[in-house]
Length: 294
Image (cartoon, rainbow, N blue to C red; front, side, top):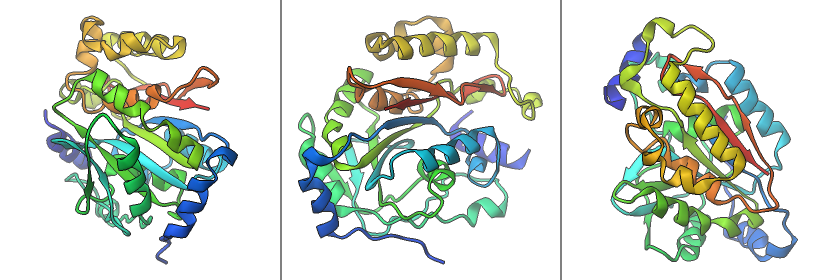
């Protein structure tokens, strides 16, 4: 089952934009040594409906928005923007992309009017050395990004840019690319990877849709295996996830929802603490497991 079909099936069963000008961005850039390092997140985003529903997952996102240091800007790596090459959004007012079908009109009515940051886009392009980064003026904010930011930062008063996933590249490439974003943490930028560690749409058990926690044995095995490597800091095993056996192979049939995790983990330093939250399985073959590095 492809992603579009899944979203359609799942759907069936005051402008508050804040524009950060060049002076403001350069101010926190020039204050590099004075800034406390920002945390990093990987968020299991699940259904787009989380943007307008209240549940245990969205309540945790709300809590994070209230307790994390307020970012100067946000850089999101979403599972839902795959490209040939690496790009960052570079426009003053990114559109809210409703990249799904079949959901209630209320979800299509959602707008997340955060401003973009051309300055941060250019900064990101400059600090990445292993590849050429393109400045994209067309994309916007897809649901992998805005569906988690709306509960987390509902005022939409923090500039947001997205960075795409080059679908041609392997896991090690994405992990190493993520490392190059480290200095942005000292400039007030909250970096968020958005996906799902266990994400097999074709094996979803729709009869278990309303159960608060349900995972197939292989999904729970994969979850625990991945979690153990995350907590122990064994990133090499996570980069080589294709060698982790049948359960992980079923959990990650395609890499798009897994790769954002590697961007997040690549930014962990020896002094950082790591913790898991929303660590539950849904509908048999999806997990909402998320990671906080601080």
